[in-house]
Image (cartoon, rainbow, N blue to C red; front, side, top):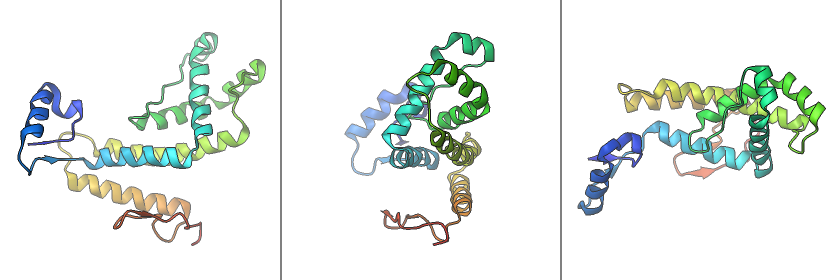
Length: 189
């Protein structure tokens, strides 16, 4: 029996799987699919590299824009929510904000709310969008009932090489073998 504990993995059998896990002898295995691990890693990176101030402003911007009914009606579109448990949503939010940036900036200029983002915040958003686009391609490609773990690992390897190439690194930022984080790598290093 294998489970990662996710409701969508165990469905209505969740109680049975939980019971088996509690009473099983050693040898009960929890399987963490590659995409679940990627989702956790993206969450960790967002928390680490986009500080609390940036993320708080992002959620403030989302909340503010979702309450502006006249803007929503005018644009015929509503800002998506970001869910910190499924990071595909971060990519959707980035895309929506950037696609509607000109109108949003004009609206903020006329209203002057306290959650008005700065110019550099939009640059961070554009970088986040580019990275999340690459990550989301892997999420989507790796999902499905017929996708094998070895295929997911191939997608992850391709993503790793793509991100290393994008930032111009000459070696991985993370040493996966021993779990150490080497933040000393700089562009051209």
